[in-house]
Image 1 (tube, one colour):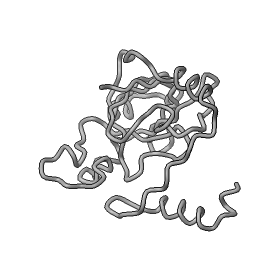
Image 2 (cartoon, one colour):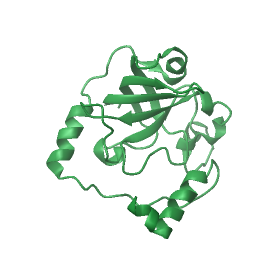
Image 3 (tube, one colour):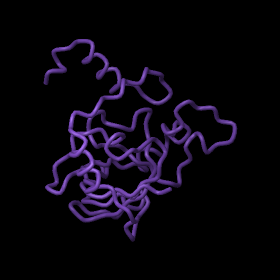
Image 4 (cartoon, helix red, strand yellow):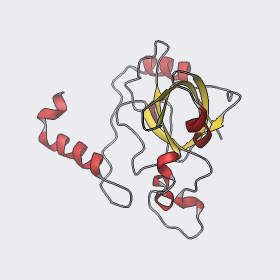
Length: 181
């Protein structure tokens, strides 16, 4: 909890947590990886899939059908908020492919089209959280953008275990990620 002792960093984290769609906050600086390159590539090769898993469901369908602790395969686009990432962790949100990112709307000049600000009424039931885990089921403590070379609006197929909360939200503890071209 060293960051709690740094008031500037604590303030930046607090502001990023309360900033909503359509509001502008400077993006935090990218964190640098602290693991040796060999460890990163080993983790990446364990998680990054070279072929797409069969039977992928769109996010909306998976939210309806996935049972708690069941193995699932879910497809979606990275996004759903101004910052769909958890800095320093292999965690991000995905959105059902039926929703349009602002960049999919002709003439829309949104600076962060992955926030889906034109679809805010549908977002709560069209997103899933992805937590990338290692072979032991432990969350990988490395930023997903660096670990898997991911960016906003990429379509990914995630394979893993479903976890539901009381509100019906879906989290996938992913042990495999395939990035569609």
